[in-house]
Image (cartoon, rainbow, N blue to C red; front, top):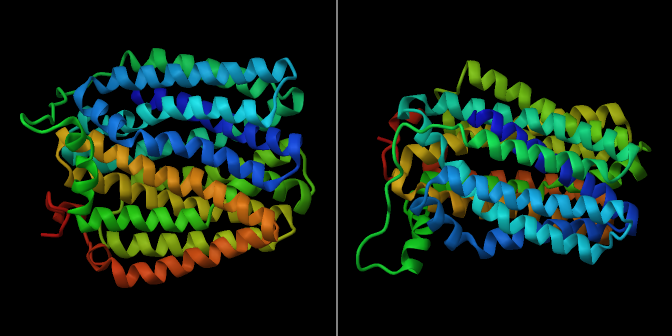
Amino acid sequence: MFLAATVLSTTALICQVTALGKLVFDLTGRELDIGWLGLAEFLPVALLVAVAGSVADRFDRRVVVRLGWAGEAIATGALAVLVAAEKATLVRILTLVVVFGVARAFANPAGRSLPANIVERHELPRLAALFSLSWQAAMILGPILAGLLYALDPMWPFVVSTGFLGLAVLSMAFVRTHQTVASGLVVGQGRMHQAIEGLRVIRQRPILLGAISLDLFAVLFGGAVALLPVLAEQRLGVGAVGFGWLRAAGGIGAALTAGVLALRPIRRRVGPTLFVAVTIFGVGTIALGVTRNYAVAFVSMLVLSGADAVSVFVRSTLGPLVVPDELRGRVAAVESVFIGASNELGGFESGLVGQWIGAPAAVVAGGVCTLAVVGTGLVVFGPLRRVDRFEDLRSDGLSA
């Protein structure tokens, strides 16, 4: 049921985000306004990181996730009403996106910490691959739904997303855990100290810090997905349906990769594999920015998203292996900020640069910067580069 709930909530998220990008660009015609969407999604996660992580460790994570998804459903439903009434403006849309981001800020850390409570330690690599596969299934379904429904009426993607979130809330009620989440609170320590514990834990584990940082800066600069509405319309000459399939190509590539990882999880040369994957992500981003051919763009999305799926698999497997359960919520909250920075803040960066030099040039520049990040990471993150097997990792984030 956990994977089913994940598919439903993620499908709703991606459907909503895809439709929002198209809606805003149709309303204003400016790349920068797409960037504002990313910033509005990122700020609540960043500002609430301390509180959200502490909540995920102090309360039943299943309840926290359900309440967060319920908040997302309310915000998405309000968007549907706004669009249906033809009263959607940039300011109103951004306001509801912020509300959605607040709910997501609490749901994400709790949800990301749940897998370690559902299965035993030795089963985590396989569950991480299945979790990634369920995410990528939603990455395929969400954009296709958004494109088809948006072509019918811009209101429908938000209506369907609201329904999916409601079903996700119900599904999470049936999730069972094999252990009770321990409270990480220590007598004599203030709430703020407890809340920022996740940042300290990551900083003291160089391998985890390296994996998160590499993903952060690579995707921050290579955030091509945010500019897909512009590329689809101005560069490739396709409408809402073609745009939806182009965005879904990312999910298809990642899902195929996640399926392979579920059957044959990475067992050896974990660190070097991560660096190779991020390199391929950068090359695929450059190809996407250069081409004017829809088929080439589709394949580029397949390749770069497949490479990103490898990065997600490695990062999501590393975390539970090197972090105690009573701190996983706080660590996941900090990770959510890093991931939000790489995706939503990366979308803002892409929109800003796209407004300045044009969307294609911004995408190419992002891919080049991603390759520069890989080169820098090979030098700076030596412990990560030397990781061979997950089983060799110690609780301090080093290899045995």
